[in-house]
Length: 157
Image (cartoon, rainbow, N blue to C red; front, side, top):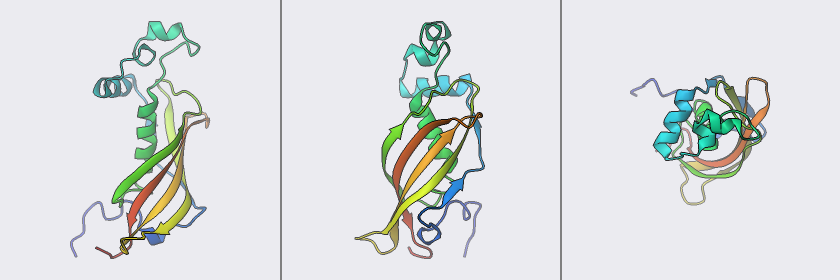
């Protein structure tokens, strides 16, 4: 069997257990360049995310990183442990921005397995329901999201 550097990425359906919490080892410091590029790519030109002078006039007093970027980072931090073998992310639900993220914040995340079920139509896979939580460098929760992920069973094609 041909092996590659991605063979150890993620888990198979049988590897997940309800109640397990995976503390993801990767971290991400959010830079101004990251935030600006994300806003440019996604056409989010709200001045709260891009204009320091405008941001000073808000309750935050400084630039707030785009929330959809933080959602993407949280999911990305979970890939090595959770969705590296995923067939598909089926949905995202209940995304909560618990606190703002600012330029220079360093994020880390954890994911809890909420439910697991085998596919009703495809015997080679199942659905894992997870909650991912992202925290800043002060361990303040900044994001909570739930999603369903379609995961293959071991050795099934």
